[in-house]
Image (cartoon, rainbow, N blue to C red; front, top):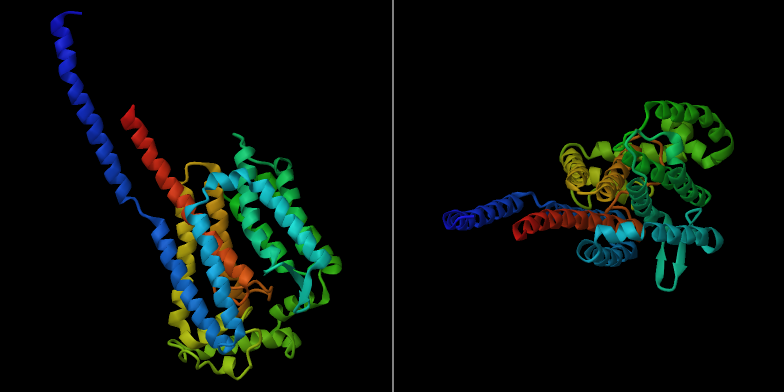
Length: 400
């Protein structure tokens, strides 16, 4: 190569480096303009925690239940911080089956030595810890399903025989939770996984077969699986006058409370159905009725918008994820938060049978509150991981 050619190449090298630097700076500008979902999630969680605590104070009259709720909130915020800023999605992926084994052991312990409350054996006390493992299972089942589809990837559509291992894993959880008895939570775990499966390519013939099998087994489930109180809940849903002094009474009083709130509500601590003790289980199952009575249609609409935003942010985070595990985990956590809210509201409005599913961030009960905070923490962790990978990818290009 002549000296003249070398001089020409040397003259071009600085230009090439400048182009690379300019491209990197442009990528950094694009990075900084990308929406930060973590901030929105944190703000929404703060609003919901504040609204939930205020609403529970009104529902309970500020008794010991409220102060217990505040203590559990501090635990939930601590766990949220750990999951959001210290635990990466890859850590959850690596420990998915260990977490599954631990929660199954907890569910077995509930059946063996759990204590009974409100007619059900769902709680277990280990030292200073007292909680419901079935609530933690809502997150664990989403992690396990995401791990399953991360490992079992295929180019063709999934068929039923390809999902047998996932069905076994979810089925074991269902079998351990159902006898507590807690059909609502057991079924909700299946619903979370089904939501995740909706984002996976499934063979349409398998869907038809599964639907046909469900239709055939429903009568058998009614006859041999459902307990009398569970059948009463369904019959009361179909006809509130079926048991006006029992399950039907709860729904009727809930409808009265929601309707009496009107457009603007009666105001904080002014709900007559709640404070005159007409509304049963106002601190847990029917706590949305308390909120609707005191804050009306406008407040209820804002609450619906808040939970819908949580679900949308979860889907957007999943869409930006760089791997299957993070994407499906974000979908599962979004389904947990929004669908549980939707079912609880539909339940108190007589649009769904009473199932005992709590309202996230609102219902009394530390386990669900802590798990809801943990779900937000994991979503923020996924979002931070997505943004970190985005930046590192371009920094790698620049270095090379």
